[in-house]
Length: 366
Image (cartoon, rainbow, N blue to C red; front, side, top):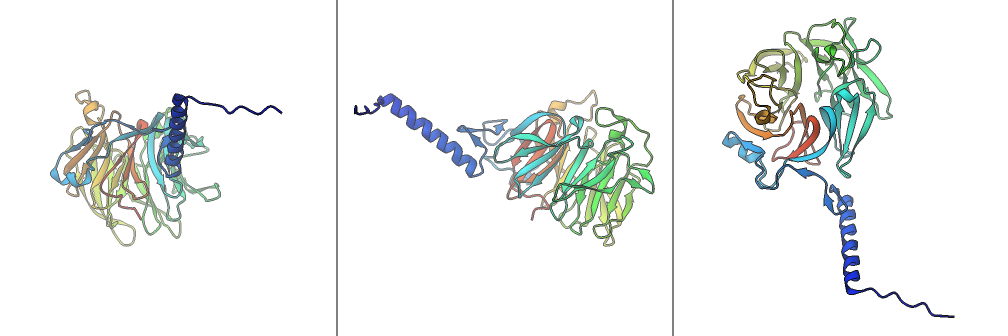
């Protein structure tokens, strides 16, 4: 029998083979360790290669401690029509984002860095959050007569429970943003924004005044806690939950109200913590662990304004003073904190998702 002749490789072929092997090994190792690395390439796209990132502006020296010198604003995914209401899932290491005009919820995976559809026909969902058991709470802004215009909960088995779809027999306008308090109560805003649009739902005649509602965490009872705010939008609690912040969108200029929270779940005195920013286009808001407000930001559409100079996230301290600005190439509608340490800021911005590691955590991080 003729012996098989060994295959001989040139020095150049051996070097190339070894290089390819190590590239593939590095790529697989990156994914296994949780990095967004495929084919030897970091998939998150930094907006700037320089440190510190010029997109992170310090407006007051107090913001310096929150900016990480070697952290970049990164573009994670794009292709949506109107990205809203991001929420982080720590156990699954993914981000959910409502793409309202496409009538779906999108899922961005931290391990693979891939963006896929999580829920098709989401009833034009808007704000998202998770309850104390990790179940998804969704504001559905669809304005058809038979579905949507409600707040739902997705159970662990995937079934959807309707938590509220009317107040005193009248259908909601278009539930917008939602937050869960540590006592299990669910608070949400109900402005008319999606009720007048065929792009983000269906045009309907509203039945209720603009309002903010609370669903009791034990009984499920629904009460109207605010009814004197024009176009309530984003909302969040202070770190100790003694203050509820609510964005008023249909006032001129837009305002952020701070309400005292009573022990029985009602609200007390209020003051406009931010009210004198003429060009402000506040949308979603979140508190960090120090009580600073991180606000979705951009131009209000006025002809005299420069959207390119405003778009992004504006950070205010507890006194309502602007201390930082994260500049983005798109209007930022809403934000959330996530990541394993709660220090990764995710920004849902028109067509895209961006992120930035910061030196603080979201107020609700546990």
